[in-house]
Length: 611
Image: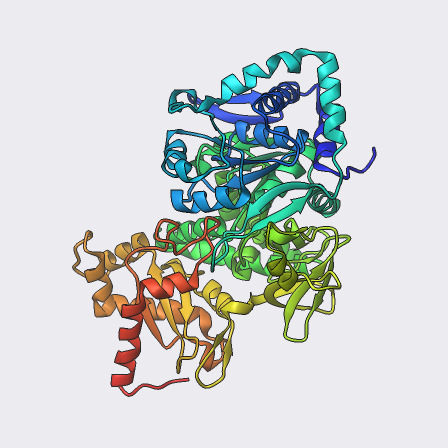
């Protein structure tokens, strides 16, 4: 088999190899999982491609996709690729004003939206978008105001899709695309400033797919559950193109809220996620175990300790002592098998990306027989730079660089990377491109890290997130936040303190766990008055203990000296999280500025000046 050089070669190659199979994709409709075969996928992609051509979309144009994950997303993407126009994926969670910025900056000729909710956003901004000529709606019952139904676009191109000569011509034209041609513009959700359109070529993404599949064991008997937004390059490359190349069946979760139920129903073998999912699963497991009877709590603690000891031997590739092996098998039967059943019972491995994963959580999952292969990358790098594999797995690192990917550490600790995965540049922004990619082709990631003696990459923090205290101490907040979030009492945490005398931490308690604890301690509180609950001395003392307990091995200056307990979690709607759930520190700090200043004033008034 010839190695693909473009995404179109991946698509048509998969059709050639798996075309007779009855399932390429699945989605849920009216309570049932509906399959799309490879043959049906090809026909739909060809029809939509012909429909877009009929609307006047030509090679080099941009077509935006504003939709949740669903088969029409995949069809639209492959249709755009096949007619050699770049698509522009947009997070469906974005508000209208941010969507307007992206559509204007990309000069999109058409936008394909999923629903009435997304169409309403386009209607709001369309009068200010001179380049936008066509609006296509996936949900037929949502079509209004001159928009085109996706089904009508598809049926309009259906005649071409049924003609063998036209199908051959379409395929030849699609395969004429080159590795250096731009496949997509992905707008960074960045934590500061306006998003920039990252130009990723066919060669960028295809090289990443093929390098990834050299080290990740995807099989044509696998099934994945897709719930991370396809607007994000991690799901796009790994959960979309890698699955197509490997013949893995893609199942689209109904929503992020149905993931647990979907895993039980579909029993996937591979799941890609961001650390937030694993943090929530871990917190639920701990909470369920600790709220049980005394004997249940003892069994869980014993099983967890046994599993983690077993994991240390396995990860070090040392023989497991016979007694420990026996105890581990018992721990698996009593505790870990139940967790495996909760994720469907067939899962071979998880993949984690998008943010740092706690090594403690990774070890627990490994002990449970649910290994999490953590990787690292950026939108600008298609995205994967490095990833842990079954053959080379070291918890607390993001693995070794992919084949063909170069990594080195600059003198200031910044991670640099070079290779075929590095973007063509930022759309319409040559100066910003030159600031990010140096003349020798090294892309400056903005992350701080180290390469150990075995070639594993460890991320210590974002270059711009480093806290430098007034006393000149350097603090990397992310590892500290990750430790704190291992407590079942903590839902989220953000450390601040740049140019201050000492750091503080903004903590979002896990309210369900905290309220249950307060009830057990006979603390009187109104369940609907969260601020009053968080103001109680006993509650504040408890949260202090929960935050500080995981930090016993940190340097004194790295430990937060005050906590600010927040009654509500950060969200995309408040602007405190990106669509990929990364915290926008500056926004968090701005939104809570008065409370933060009050914490520092109280410390000053009390005469505490710790560092």
